[in-house]
Every structure is written in structure tokens, then in C-alpha cells.
Image (cartoon, rainbow, N blue to C red; front, top):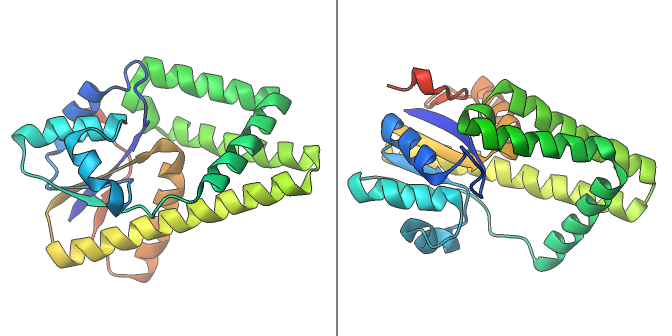
Length: 219
């Protein structure tokens, strides 16, 4: 089985839009789409009412293609987790001009270059810099509570990414499709790819992954 790991954004931004993602799906012709949602969100995702870019593109793709959509994310954490995480990241943004500049450049590159940028090595490097600046800014602020929130945020996302991989492996064994696509927010892509490579080091590769989507290579 071949799975293409496609980094996305959840809200349309310039060339990163529904029609472009639908065109990518048309080229890849997946028989299964692994979605960054929990099982409870599947019905809204399938009819496009989930409200994000990916669900709208998948809904359009399903009009003319037979495809199975498999939710691979965990259930959402509680409201307190999101409120505290937003508070923590807002504090970092107010404090660090480097952090603000990285986010602004990422937004601009997404707008101007769309999925070509979102799936580039450069984008992965930008997110690595964003995470590094987040950690260093929190260390500089010196607020133990904010550091604890960030540690919890990292733990939650680590569990989510591991769960996604495990669910994909289990589904591929049970259903053995030929072609699949994993649609995931680009902030997760590099970490997911690194974890997948570690999984493959200890297991026979039942899944072959395409980590570097490039439009010219799609046939």
C-alpha cells in the first residue's frame, strides 16, 4: 500500500484552497483518505459541514470517486486545554518578534505558494523554528505555569500523532487498499514523518509512504 502524507491548512488561504486540494486528490486517486478527525466528527466531515478546507475538498472528491474516509485522530481534549494553550501561545506571540515574523512569513508563503510550500522541506524547517522559538520564549518568560501548559500541549499532540499512525497501520492490515492519503495539518507533518520512519525501522514495511508531495510527480 502506498500512502501520500499531505500537509494542509484547515482554513483557505490564497493558493491553499479547496479546489487545489481537490485537484491533488484527483491526481492521487486514493481509495482511502485518513482524516485528522475523531470518529464522532465523521458524519459532518463527509458532507462538508465540518467547516474546514479538508472536509470540503473531500466532500467534492466523493461526488465522483468511491473512497473510504477513516478518522484517525483522538477525541478533542476539554475546553480548558484549548483555552490554556491559546493563552500560552498568545503570550509567546506578544513577547517574541521572531515568533511573529515566522508566523507572518508562513502565512504569506502559504497564500502565495499553497500546497507546494506546505509540503516542502522549507515549511518543515519553519515549523521547527516556530517550536524552538516557542520553547525559548517560554524559558525566557520564566513562568512555570506557562511551561507546564506547553509541556501538556506537546504531550497531547505526541499522543495524537502516535494514535494516527497506529490506526492507519491497523486499517491497512484489515482492509489492504492500494492507495491512500493522510491529510494532516502541516504543523504535524514533519513530526509524523519522523515517527513513521521509526515505526518502519522495527517492522516490515507493509506501507510505503510518500512524504514529499510534489505536483510534478503525481501521475
